[in-house]
Amino acid sequence: MKKILVIGSVGQIGSEFTLDLRKIYGNENVIANGRKTKPSEKLLKSGPFEFFSATNKGDLEFYCKKYNIDTIVNMAAILSVVGEDKPMLAWDVNMNGLINVLEVARDMKMEQVLVPSSIAVFGPETPVNNTPQETILRPTTMYGVTKVAGELLGDYYVRKYGLDVRGLRYPGIISNETLPGGGTTDYAVAIYYEAIKNKKYTCFVKEDTQLPMMYMPDCIKATIDLMQADFSKLKHHSDFNVGAMSFTAGELAASIKKYIPEFEITYAPDHRQAIADSWPNSVDDSAAREEWGWRPAYDLDAMTQDMLKVLGEKHKKGLL
Ligand code: SER
Image 1 (cartoon, rainbow, N blue to C red):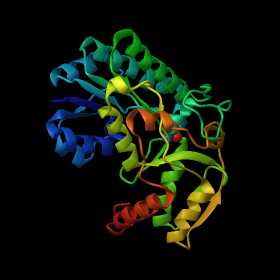
Image 2 (cartoon, rainbow, N blue to C red; image 1 turned 135 degrees about the vertical axis):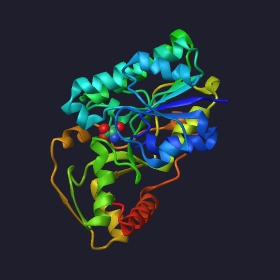
Image 3 (cartoon, rainbow, N blue to C red; image 1 turned 60 degrees about the vertical axis):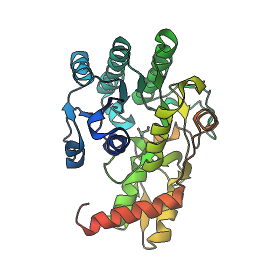
Image 4 (cartoon, helix red, strand yellow; image 1 turned 180 degrees about the vertical axis):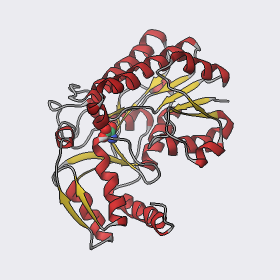
């Protein structure tokens, strides 16, 4: 039976992904970890939880041995905006945390390590439309720099040590359980919360800013599908492009207006605009489709309907 450690289980993706993983592999077989944020009751009550930072190799090793871990999913990361504010923290969490994960996994002969990457690996010189799998990786953010280095490190451990390392380049992830922690694509989440609460939103990127995005159920499906893929069939390892939908801020607002006609949006681009401008409009994910059968389920309107339904119910209960 698999024993999986999810590092960063309290974050936007980890908080939902860990619960789904527990449904598949059993509550006791999925150990949740956080660095400092208080976990939800759901996460705490459904299985083991340990507070530690993967940047401390001794702690990581201790808990991996305590639970006999054979698989690590490293969801911990400092995202693009916080990373520009605190570049050294981004380096520490994203790089030192990762090298510790890879070293402990190698040392303990683990079965698998999954480390998400991001569209932040791309930069202003990368082709923006249908960005290819193999392309120019010259990011301008510290987050992007650490994600490129992380992809290279993952592939290095596959080649040099035969360690099974996998990763996928998440686009902006939209969800309704835990807010994202300081990324450039956060407007695509905040807009739904504000549409429900105040029927208006001031967007920090321009109306025609287009980025690749994905709804949380597809993000979880992509991650689990990649974890379960046959390793021998993979030609890529740490850097799969995964697409789902791609829209401008204006198209996002128009989708919300279909269901909340009185919704109003204004645009006040700030320092995050330059980061958004350095990332692709859309990505070519044919490698993920061919090598492990990736297929997204949600488009923009399907996501909008679900987001507004879930957040509307939370709002009625006074939970927003
Ligand atoms: N959502 C991330 C960010 O905006 C991109 O992976 O930083």
